[in-house]
Picture (cartoon, rainbow, N blue to C red):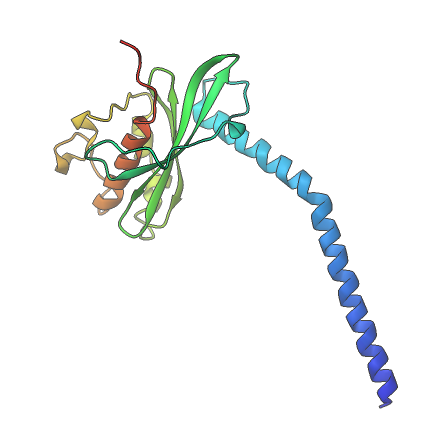
Length: 197
């Protein structure tokens, strides 16, 4: 084989790879804005579904408050992450709070929407890495939805697992996971503003 031809082929291949890389980067740059807008629209739809039937007209994604430095209520082993107010005009109609608690294997992160009076509008598991089949039941069963429509006072003993003296049955075989989800829910409830007397 001609050494000159081998160099030409290698140069052509390198040039083709470079052109392809530039095209991929250009396409990524061109689509980045459209992808960001689509993800933002989806996040707003998810918040609307979580907080239904509450209607809001603000963009809560631009009003996120970091709550990680806030002290947790006594007796709760969970961490507040962030909150987002949902407003209708100037009036706050709901508050969405993200909270995390340590489960059996790893953290469980919940997103909870509270009406302005403290009633739970909706809950969603944002993240969990519990034992396959056990932690999945937080998402796939109605265990969490039992709290929708209820008020979640932080110091309310009935919002504890039955085995901890409360009124909530744990997921079968997943006591630690159930306790962590409740802890996250209760610490999320603590982020709500206290009503004036």
